[in-house]
Image 1 (cartoon, rainbow, N blue to C red):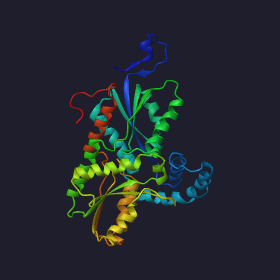
Image 2: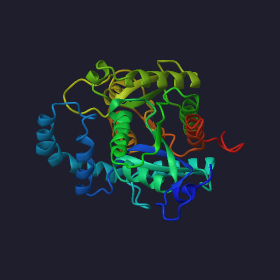
Image 3: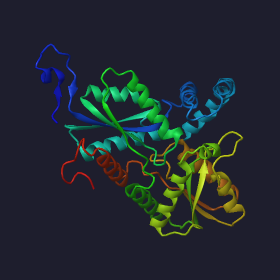
Image 4: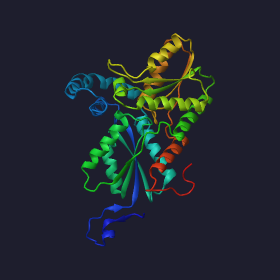
Length: 357
């Protein structure tokens, strides 16, 4: 469909001019503070940790804890972590950088001139906001929008909250665009291939070979899993498929979970404890960690794993440690996104020949 306006369709020059005819794709990632300044980090954490999908506790009790303790003590520590990985040349976090690059690469692959398809990106928490970018796409003539949560494995606290936010924005729209949401892609062959190729490329760059590779996924309270969240199952399947694609044994390629906080039990085994035990108790001296639950490097992969994990491993007796980069905006990542988006746009949009690998 060519780009037209409602005035042209109605044949009335004085009709409000609203552009129509494009299809929009909105990639949505978790979020990032706008800077490493403590006030910006506090603002980001307040939005993130106020989401009842993320923290499923009594809201009155949690509000008191969040504003009385956490937002008073945690922002300086989090700001320090962000400073350790901040991209000073572009003054942004790696998550923002790579998400933007993924959107740009996907647009270049599918419709460089944006004649019929526009690709944009947003953050669930922080900026650019989901609603802002949905409206920008609509203003540019996108009357159909595909939302792509950039979480390979589904959880109510990640994918679920993106869909919640989209629904909230639609409530305030006079003329709502048609909206689709892409499903989890934890077992998508293109994603498994992108992760596996990234692992192989990184390992080939080393002058040593890891004895064990940990596939570390972001953690989740165990009670979320017991309530029916499929996240653990999705992580386990991703890890198994990547391991099989690499031809490795379960003993060499292992599944763990990182980033827990609080006192309750989270999904196990825990990454930090496993890293320490591998060196201290199993005599492993060469370790690699890959993070297939993230499509873009961020504070959890670069500071928590590449820095803290490395330090933990060496203190326990390890000698060689490497953190394998996320798929980021690699050619394989763009291949994966192009495949996923093209499939989910079936009936709305189709690429020209030879644009999708």
